[in-house]
Image (cartoon, one colour):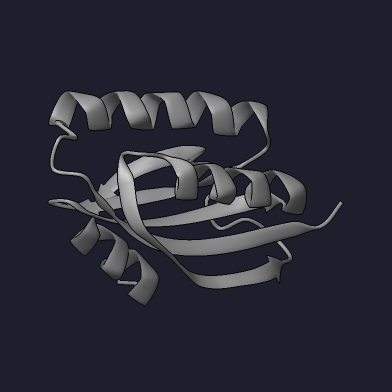
Length: 108
């Protein structure tokens, strides 16, 4: 089974509260674990950047679900590619500040 990676951005609707975000991340972690998906959700106010990794079919379905999710708008796929191995295997689904993700991406 091949693994794919999707990087995406979106904007959260103004009615999404901090407790809503906490529930979204907790639900995503549970769902992703049961579907072999790992990744990270970086948040800066209402802007979101996500990286999803896992079995191609599962990642595709999750991306389609995110595009239909009423909490998000302006969902944009930045990158889609096959990957040899997960970068976030130990993370499951983690929430990080956007600055932390930029530093991680730069290897800092």
